[in-house]
Image (tube, rainbow, N blue to C red; front, side, top):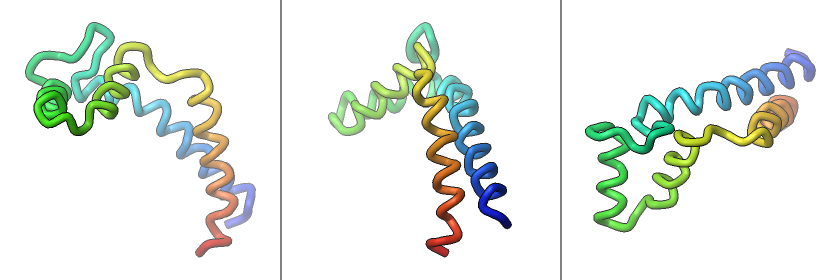
Length: 92
């Protein structure tokens, strides 16, 4: 597989990740209206509030569910994926 192909595959994986992330976060129960009652997100929030562990992760997921990902993320993820794809053979 050539360098251009690896770069294209890496960029595709990065793009697929940022496209799928809001869908997955929504399926976990982190929605624009808040955390859905009875969802996995509600369980995560309850556990994080009780133990104090994971509040940053829950907050980040809640932010992504409410507002989506930033434009910078949509640009950076495919770019990073492309670089990782190009370098993958080097570290094989």
